[in-house]
Length: 191
Image (cartoon, rainbow, N blue to C red; front, top):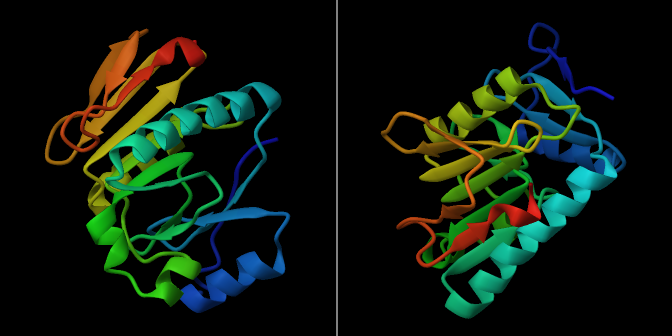
């Protein structure tokens, strides 16, 4: 299965509320929207990618429970980013004070906020160029730190706000730096 991008812009430009309703009306389909307003239909992941996503998310949840610094979100959470896109990173984290600044209604729907951290784990159906464009979109939206993990080639791309991308080959660990204080992801669960 592959990702499908549909451009409806010459026919209709969906409002945030219409996009939210589209997602509610089609719960079996995972939609995203890029900054250009194009609708993206995301295929489900396979077993290996799904397992890795769960293992990675568990590491973030355990760290966050200990530190109590923010909120961790899984790949089912869609964020309305300030650049007009609606994205669902595989793992995301928002500092607690920023999350608490949202209204209860904003927290319940697609939160209109850029996470402080996002992680994308490439699955076999993902296209590297499209995923790298998504990572740049996250950074343009105000994400402070993001990781793109490509299991097949054991590569990690690290994106930091205001800096050039860093590429690591088969790293053993990744540090959350000052965005996720004290967080270390052991990549043995991925490789």
